[in-house]
Image (cartoon, rainbow, N blue to C red; front, top):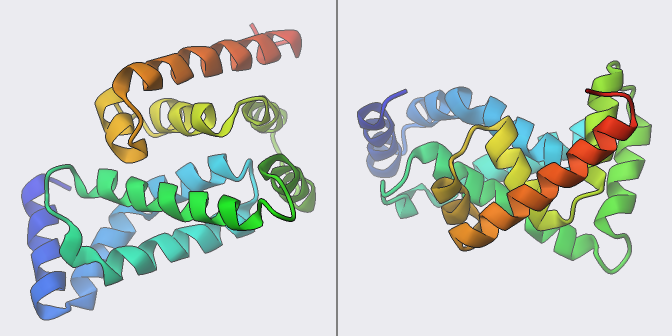
Length: 178
């Protein structure tokens, strides 16, 4: 979807509360948002689907705040990041992120050994490294977009990426990959 289509659909939603237009935006971008959240929850598909739903509800209710300075997907990733961060912050008093992710991973069957190993490698990363790695390697976002989504300076994003990639590479090498 090109920028002109995005802006046209956003205007239809904002001005006319056109749910069909929002449905088009949602269908276009639900897969990348879900993938991003699935990586953040380390494979907990039920939790990531719940967080994705919250993301789209917030996007719909706050669509008038979309200014078009970035792509609609970048704006959605920012909302998804905030939804996930709010979830983690709310759960911090009873469970930390790693415990939540391990529980989620154990609750569903993961078919691929590689997928399991990638989620295990992601567990080694701190929150900021995981977000940056996911946005760059899994969602193809450039450093400037990652910086905009996370509100982390570009040089810090680069540092998180370098450390995260090194940790993941070492783990995967130790587990028989390349």
